[in-house]
Image (tube, one colour):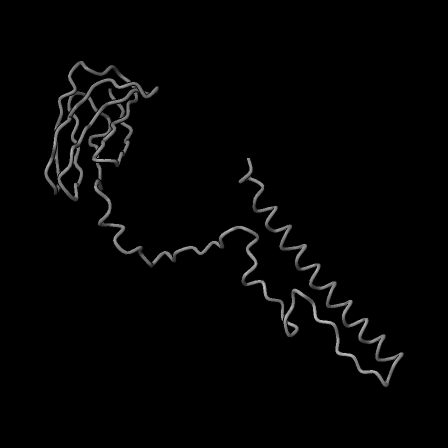
Length: 171
């Protein structure tokens, strides 16, 4: 709930800051014009705002406790992010299963892998695989038989700390 309104609060604070800057600039120029018209002999420099410097508003370092958002461009990749993934390219086929399911995925290093079938409520129906597999492309076939009734299920593939879930339909 707090995060929902944080952008509104941030923009309000920035708006108030801009309003205060413009008001202090107007007040400074107004007082300097009044001083110059009433006392021509006394030349006083215009009052400087505490927020402005040399007439330019500097809001580069105003963050109000929030870190500024700096998105990574789409063409840039974070160094080493592909190598950090342990499990990738998980494919379940055919998606409408009658008696056999084929599962392929890529492991970037040797790890313990478990493949489980879950129902729509998240209850474990059956375990298809629970063993240590070597790195590389893995393709496995499992016979479903009469283990699953007709309906929708989820295949949960866990390798190390990574989990990928795919939806399947059993005919």
